Every structure is written in structure tokens, then in C-alpha cells.
Length: 534
Ligand code: NAP
Image (cartoon, rainbow, N blue to C red; front, side, top):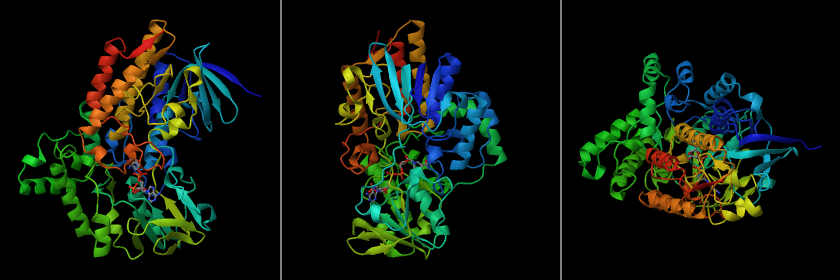
């Protein structure tokens, strides 16, 4: 039997975004709101990504909500970069504190959503056959949640076990005595490989594209720092929300191309020792000038060659074909040093591409590597994958999967023409993955909440953006990307290049979080320019 529930708002996803959206709509606006979540608990990314070494690359004091001063003051992080279990504990604490679970349906996967024009309602269907209706539909499905398992021939015949890092078994994986193959050397692989190598008998890393990585220099937080972060919370928040990337540091106002070489070296060395993504903020021209970028790229490549004892491995790891930080730069704990272990070998798939998976292991054009376990650290169908899986249908039955065949089109990453009363938190066309995500999420949730409040105050039933506003915004997204080196990397997931057949469109907004925020504020102040209410 089917249930029909009518609500004011349905939110899909109970990670950072969905939880704050629930708090905002339910507790600030008094809307009847339900969150639908595929997992059995809150946490989103941090619920699913339980692979060994899973840790955040944003510093803990910035990887949290700032909307509640009380919450900021009461929560205590233990390390500079929080591990997955600690972030999940934090999000569960938030769920308890704000009594969120009573309005979240767990183990509930959305299979379709269509707009009923006669009633101005979204009709949302779940895998269990439930139907819910609501005036507003808000997606909070995350940018990196649709796992990308390469369509490699033979996987179904593999005699061992295989796992994708983004859907890691809750009970963990026992690597003891095993020969493990890890495919992928993005942020995830770089975190997982050192941990797996400590446990497994042997690890073979299959690298397609060599990657930069910076030392995290992770450590327990000192009592002094914990007190500092609480006492200066307002100041830290101000920095995070007035810079381009949402991190708690500013980008230095100096150019590498105007700095003498010996000074550049000292600056990079100090940043390398300090660790973390601040390295990217040492000069303001690193992402806009190839000459500037080369100084950072060469410094890191030199470091990699120094760290790796075996010259063959060193060359494979340091042979990087793209500008530094033009793909998301990972940070690591002992990643390069791990290749000095006797039980770790490295295969360059550039030199010998993977052909197929055979029952015994992975076969490249060179040989078969016998394996007991394959770990796919192969990333995600980023930014659009999870949205398209929702099977969203808008006005006149138009399908999002058709409308986005040539790539995503949004207005501000928040609205899509033809889909009234649908809001996408950190959707394509917003800064999202180019930022520390919690401040980007808070900005979106607050903007959406203000827009809905405006509609309620003025008794407006629907809001939708226009093709014209969307086209103009896409031009701005392209302009912002082309002002940087980011689109130069043709094999980046920012462009959708990691998923065969996906259109190559630069998806996030590269104009910076603070600039983006001011655009969104102007749009709202200008009567929600580019959006039509009825
Ligand atoms: P990713 O950056 O997309 O890296 C995937 C890796 O798998 C790349 O090395 C890729 O090679 C390789 N790969 C993909 N398909 C392959 C195939 N068919 N054959 C061989 N190799 C293949 O994915 P990720 O490492 O999961 O990271 C995704 C994003 O999630 C990050 O950029 C970051 O934004 C976020 N993340 C954050 C954290 C954190 O904060 N600590 C941790 C993990 C992830 P190519 O480069 O050649 O495509």
C-alpha cells in the first residue's frame, strides 16, 4: 500500500547540507519538512567514506558549522585534520542537539521526483514505494557521492573481493596477509594507500596520472590552539567567508612571477614544513599564470624525487602532466614515503594500460598482477551524478537527464530553468568543490531559506529561473574558469572527464566564494533578479 504525505518541503540527503537545511526550514521558518536519506544514519559523505585513512583536508576548526555560536563553543576537535569517525561523531552530535532525527527518514532512497503543475507540488517517490508531496524540493545530495567504478571488463569474474572507497563496508576490510591492488591516486587513494600498506602483505598501486601531494603535517591540537579557535571564532569565520576558498587563511597578496627565486624557495619550504592546503595560498598568481605555477610544480616535483629512494618509482610519481592545483591537490600523511616500503610496488598505467580484470587479478598490457583484494579509489561521478540519479522531471514532464545531456545548466548553482521550487545546494555552477564546503553550504542554505521566507511573506506559490538568466550565469561560470589554469587539465573531474561519455563542461564556479556570495546577495536584494515568482 502506498502512503501519501504532504509537506511544505522535502530535503534529499542528511549530510552537512541537508541537516542545516532542516534546521533552517523547520526551526526558523516553521515549515513541515522531511529529509529523505539513503543511509541508515546522518553524515552523507562521512557516513559512506569509511576507507582506512579517511580524513578531511580542511582544518578541523574550519570544517564545522558556524551558524550556532553555542555549537562552535561546545564542540572540541582532537586533531588538526579530523578523521572520518570524528566528523561523523560531530554530525551525530548536531543531529542530537537540534533533535533532527525525528524529521529524517533513513534507509530511504529517492527514485523519482516530478512537478505536479496543477497543485504546484513536487511528488517524490522512494524505493520502498512511498510517495511524498511538498511545495519545495531541495537537493542536498553532495557533490562527490555517486561512486565511479570503472567499467573494466572482467570485474564480475574477479575471484577476490573488491571495494569502492566511497561505499566502504561498515565492518571494515581485513587486509592482513593479502595482496591488495589500489587503483587511483587522487585525494582518496593518497590517504588510503599508506594505511593499507601497513596492514597488507603487499600493495600494488596502479597509477594512471601522477599527482601532486602536500604534507598534511597532521597532529593533535594543543590546548592553546583549541582555546584560540574558540576565542577567535568570529574572526575565523570572517576570514573563511571573505576569501575565495572558504578556508581560514588568506591568499598572500604577492606574485611568484615578481619574487626572486631564492625567496620563492624559502616561502615554499616554510609552507611545505607547515603542511596543508595553505601552500596553495603562498602566491596569488599560482592559479592564473603558468610561469608562476611552474615554480610551485617544480618545487613539489623536486621534493617527490628526494623522498623516493627507488629512482624508477620516483620518476613515475614525479612525472606530473598538469599544473599544480589545477586538479584538486591532495594532502597526505607519509604517502610518498610509503613507496619506500618493501611491500609496496607501483605500476604506471600510462606506460602499460589496464586491459581487463581476470579471476586472478589485474591484467595490464604488460602482465597479470595477482591480487586478493582490489580497492577502487577511482572517485565519483562528481557534481551531477547524484542529481541525475534522482530522475527529476519538471514542467511538461521535461527530464533533467535530457536537459543536462550537454552538461549542467543552472542559475547560480541554485536553480534550474523548467524546475520550479527546486533548489540545489552546492549544485554545479556554484563554488562548492573549489571551497572548504561547510561555509559554502551555510551560504546556500541561508540564501535558499531567505528566498522561501520571502515567498511565504508575500504569499508566492512558485519560483523559477529563466533560460536567459541561466545562459548568462553559464557565461560567467565559463569566464571565471577561463581566467584560471583549471580548464587546462583535460582529465579532471571538474570537467567530468573521469566518467566515460560525460560531457566535458567545467562545472564548479571558479570566481571565488566571497565574490559569489556578493553576487547572490545582490540578486536577492534586487528582488531575486533572474527568478520569477507567481
Ligand atoms: P579522484 O580525485 O577523481 O581520483 C580518482 C583516481 O582514480 C585518479 O587517480 C584517477 O586517475 C584514477 N582513476 C579513475 N578511473 C580510473 C580508471 N578507469 N583506471 C585507472 N585509474 C582511474 O577521486 P578521489 O581521490 O576519490 O577524490 C575525489 C574528490 O573527493 C577529491 O578531489 C576531493 O575533493 C574529495 N576528497 C576529499 C578528501 C578530503 O578532504 N580528505 C578525501 C578524499 C576525497 P586520473 O587522474 O588519470 O583520472
